[in-house]
Image (cartoon, rainbow over all chains, first blue to last red; front, side):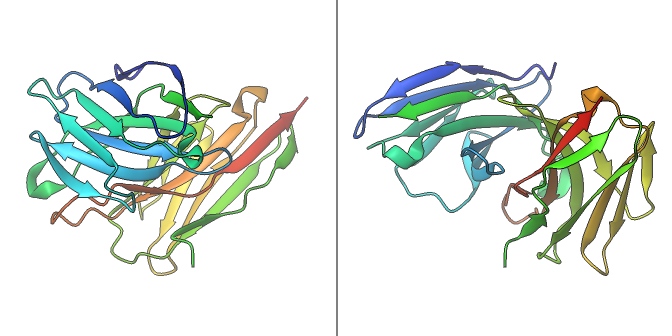
Length: 116
Length: 113
């Protein structure tokens, strides 16, 4: 196992609600990336957190936001949920090395979000 | 043009056969390359990194052609347990801010007894 944990495992929300997903990174890793995987698609990069700041962002609207804590764990927050937000949300833990490059990313088991 | 393209399959292959997957990527600035394996309703797991010199791990061989922006994965003597979706992944991190991993949609492999 990777040592990356996520909670909750499953979640059901209704349109317009807000949700918070949590991720604990692997010991020794300092960077957390979040991905959204819709059914039948590959994961899509949402954003990455390093040193408690957003370090890069994919093509997702501002209602997707996040936090990283001093222990390197992270949260993903999604406001004003839409039906299309139904997906598997994956976090990936990695180590930021010199020059801003991240080493191999290891994924947690994911949170399956259903928006009704 | 999609950034990482893979044949979605499914590839139906008899046990013991050799199967090859291909993938192309569009971002010439891509720095590192991987194959991940994903089982149904599970998270992606790193199968192997891919290098220009080619690399082998047991029954699995991966190859990168930077000039053609092409990545391949070869599985020899396939096992029933190889049935999964194989994701081609590139990392275009340039040091100026994270771009994250870019995934293909995956190739679905079914090994038949």
